[in-house]
Image (cartoon, rainbow over the protein chains, first blue to last red):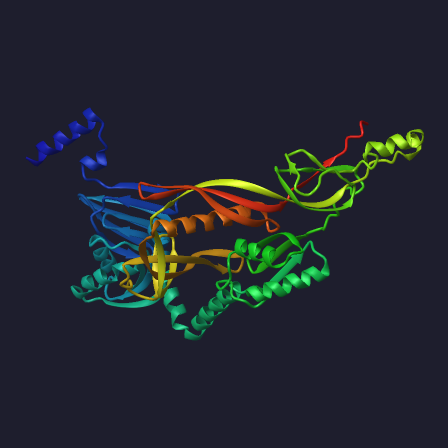
Length: 93
Length: 409
């Protein structure tokens, strides 16, 4: 059943060129150089410290590493991170 | 970023969260719909972040369900600034008093400036203005409008031809034009005196010129009364001195004389037998309002008096602040009780009133020198509640009119 839904969604994206982040409930990540990291549609903060941020996303996690992290803005499904970013890792399970 | 900027106005607080992985508390807040910004992790168990003032209640609700300890470390924004300011009572009092003081001083006349007239008249005007209450230190509210002052000044100081009164802020500018008493234009201009109206001459007093009429003569308008041509004497004289005539001829002079004549006027008028008029009973009440735009805030005098008919008299005074006019006006209203009266008069009374009225009107028209000798009712009739009158008035007045002699150049 889930497989069928998945295929239908891929079809929608291809045929009607709909934005994939909306259809597939995946996060949209915007990075500006190494200073800003902006994520929409995440599913919760797991760990946050001065040099690491880990967020839950659909089917996995996003891990950002760097230094002097400040969460510039936190909204229900959005986070804006400021600092020196050195590494963005997508952990899919 | 936008959130943190707008919150300067509404106010925001910095909270310090204590507990294991404190960032999760902010995550909880965010998922509840509370905007959090500037989250910084101080140490493993300490985390600070900003939330807006209006979200504090909700944040406390979230905290109750968790084991985190939350403390406020900083208060920012306008509401806190205002609060801090309001707590300084002496400062506030001082500000209030100074504004009041400004308001007070802005509504006082500081200077009366008189221009355009010589010193002696300036002093006279100054005294007169002081009598009206226009002097440095007087309240602006208690004054009449500049136009009223202007009219009063012209009436009370005969030397003034015109006075422009202008109020600019706290200064009264007064510009005067002195009346220059002009000599009668060209007294030497040769002229005759002619009659301006028809009438019967009653009095002749000639100071210069040759009289051409005698008492009890009937004259028509344009008839020469006194001639400025001195050669114009009886013909017998000129015949006798025929040979000398060329030498005797004297240039015409300006005739001067006072000639009164008995003139008459026919006046027709109608007087109604029933008439209305309104009268103030003397009962009155004062009211004071503070007005901005269409809104009036009563300060003194509440409730309407129980008069049947009310005569309202309103005066408005603007309140100034420094050089600006505030959109505030003080409105003084005097409510006076009035009553309508209807009265009837008999035909005889109506005629009497009619004659009085006609005499008054004629006197106004002819000036103070005219003397009304007699009045007669020629015809009277009552029609539709009105009395129609035809009056015959006989008047003694000066009928002299100057007419220059055309010398043909």
